[in-house]
Amino acid sequence: MSAITREDVAHLARLAHIQMDGEELDRMAGELDVIVDAIASVSEVASQDVPATSHPIPLNNVFREDTPHGMLTQEQALAMAPDAEDGQFKVPAILDGE
Amino acid sequence: MTEQNYTPDQLIRLSALQMADLLRAGTITSVELTQAHLDRIADVDGGESGIHAFLHVNTDEALAVAAEVDAIRAAGGLEADALHPLAGVPIAVKDLIVTIGQPTTAGSKMLEGWMSPYDATVVEKIRTARLPILGKTNLDEFAMGSSTEHSAFGNTLNPWDPARIPGGSGGGSAAAVAAFMAPLALGTDTGGSIRQPGAVTGTVGAKPTYGGVSRYGVIAMASSLDQVGPVTRTVQDSAALQELIGGHDPRDSTSLPKPLEGLLTAAQQQDITGLRIGIVKELQGEGYQAGVLERFQEAVKVLEDAGAVVQEVSCPHFGYALGAYYLIMPSEVSSNLAKFDGVRYGNRVVPDGGGTIEQVMGATRAAGFGEEVKRRIILGTYALSAGYYDAYYGSAQKVRTLIQRDLEAAFDQVDVLISPTSPTTAFAFGEKLDDPLAMYLNDVATIPANLAGIPGISVPGGLSEGLPVGVQFLAPVRGDAVMYRAAAALESRLEQQWGGPIWQQSERLAATDHSQTAGGDR
Image (cartoon, rainbow over all chains, first blue to last red; front, side, top):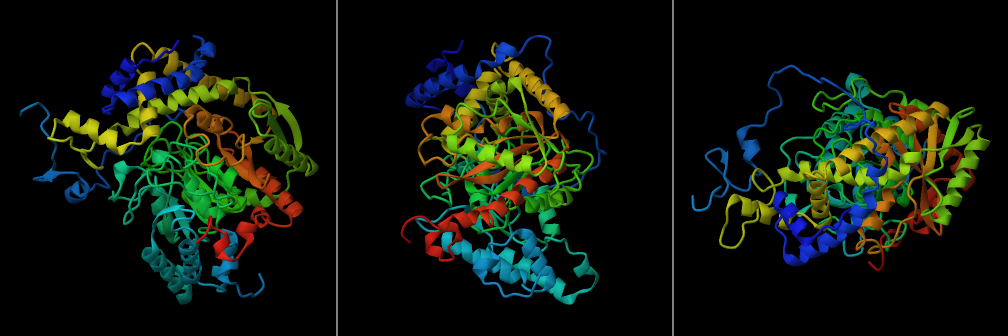
């Protein structure tokens, strides 16, 4: 059911914010096709009456007191930032030309 | 223990609990012990032909902590009495676990040079117990791989044969312990990253019950599967280390409310009369190396002779476990690794001539992530995308339920399950690097434990063509104690047969002449 195309990978790479060149897209498409073929068999046994398990050991309603603790200082939080200014993380323009 | 002088070469080959005994008796100091390990690291880990288990060596801090322990012991009194039994025994930490004062890279260029502003809970526990931290160990990038070939900072060599992989992702921790650079190490296991390196390096590695050890401060790969655990040379050492790092942590909401207790006691028990052991029918046969199956069958015989009751059990859905794992894990990876976008931390890459933030993120992630990480992010994005979600991710989660049911039925009949840990012994570098699927098949016997959240351990089962074979025990959720009991019983009986620990069968590891341990000419 797979047959992943180069265009599919380009779309997925865009969604995942990973820049890829043509050669990489071609290689990845071929590799993913093989992998997906090998793992797609899961749908054979996944009938409707089988409930899904998202977590191996169900622990529900894990709450704690809503009190601040163990916070980083602003200095600590920004210490390893690629770029910072005025106590904030600094990023390039979010929209073109602004 | 009789009074005896130990050379550094003898000291580093003792078990962690033996080292702890000598420290308590005052026969050796922690500074001597820590220095012996640092010297060993300097001798066999660095340079062109070194093992390269460590990405960072924490010399000054390790010696300072060792000196503190020695001073407390020398002063005596309440503080000395209150020292943890393992205080002063050095430890290595997988570089996926964050540490104040040492870089944490996750084996990725993305985080090269990154310094964490906080300690993981397991690191806090180690510091509180005063175990000197020797350094951070190599791994496949973000713990994705079975060979350490996916580390951005080079391969770690297998101390048994430098032409071969040390397993992965925790190959650095396993190689450090196998080559006597550390008696204890921390690993993480998402699909076998503690147990498979243990198997191929002749060491012991345990994945505790999911939630048994806090993951706070462990860089997440696949959150419903990840677990921290011990890497050691003996089963008792693993049990002791799991007791130290385990327990409830309010900062990890998946942490079990009650600690898993009595692990070391269970590992000391030795009696397995009447213990019911199940051989998993689906975890043998095709795809398993003949030598691996031979050692496995001998291990089963040893357990039977020791009084265990062995029967075959079937887990019919295990054939789908690999597929379920390689859908669930990449899906969680694609989500967990979204945070590495070059905004708050990590190495930002700006395209030539600048760019928008989206272009910067694309360039940052293209340059920062290696091939395998990208492959898994794309695979996960695919599995979660509209139109495929039900067929892939949804089905995989149902398979997870079926595997849990298989295991519940099996554990109605037996106390523990047994299988080979890995289908093969250590393979050569490059052998599977260009075939991702072949690499993934390494995990076939270890993955079910992660999907079901149960504990698993690998112990040395002997050699095949001169390379270590691992035997895996699996136990029910919260059954870590019985897992350690069974594993220790096998270990002690095999060591009786061999006349000592498995590493004595390696000329390279038994040799006290350092030049023989690392690969090639030095």
